[in-house]
Length: 98
Image (cartoon, rainbow, N blue to C red):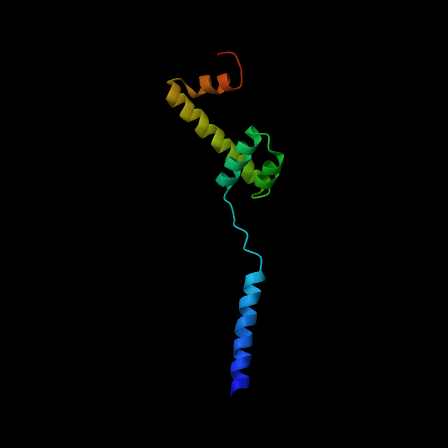
């Protein structure tokens, strides 16, 4: 009887140890998280974070996310400044007024 109990306890302990040393599951990131991390890292010139964020999603998804972030940022600034999105976008890029 003690032999069976020992085997069961050994299996449980072995499974517990295997779970303890198993690498944590990688968290999946959506394209908007990747875009936010990529753009903020780019603004801070942090190459390590740029590479990390770029690896979270496909290049196409990252491009879409960065574009969406840019559109939302220009719209938010335009509302805040009381200007048109076109004026704000040109101003941010240092272009003369249209």
